[in-house]
Length: 195
Image (cartoon, rainbow, N blue to C red; front, side):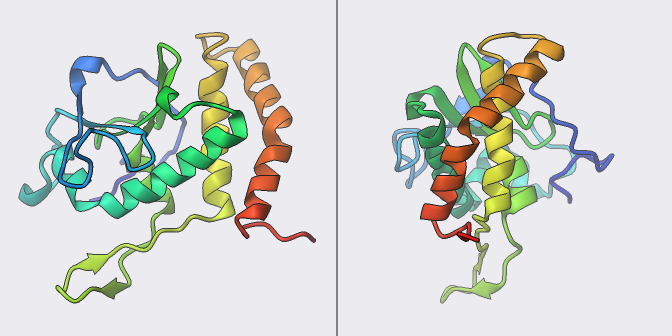
């Protein structure tokens, strides 16, 4: 099944997912409900309609995709450095059926792992000694650029709630102001050449 909306569109949606639909994700790797770098983790309590029996709950998806969680948390952590945000102001969640890429609730930005996996995680290419597939991450400049813009959009909601012209102007302002820091970070990570 596709991780993307059936319509195929990637229209950015930032509809807030009610807190009662999100539960902290705790596993053997994430014992305190946070990634190793301190980003909070949540999963949706809703069942997916299209998922196979082995992946009915978003919690199961997260348990099976810890590499993606770790890679995505690295992206978010690096972008928090660009925007000078504390990691306590961001979270990663997995909601398989919503069109919500990210949302801002009470000045806390939540990013949907579903869209990271669908857009930026490569298909499995190798197998480990146990015969399990390993998904290779794709931490590219295009991945960082995408989430940089999403973060700017959500930060603009700290200043205005509606999706109107003013929100668009704030989003553009964040992008313009922080683009040099993003470029510098990408260069430092070896994802941008000096040409």
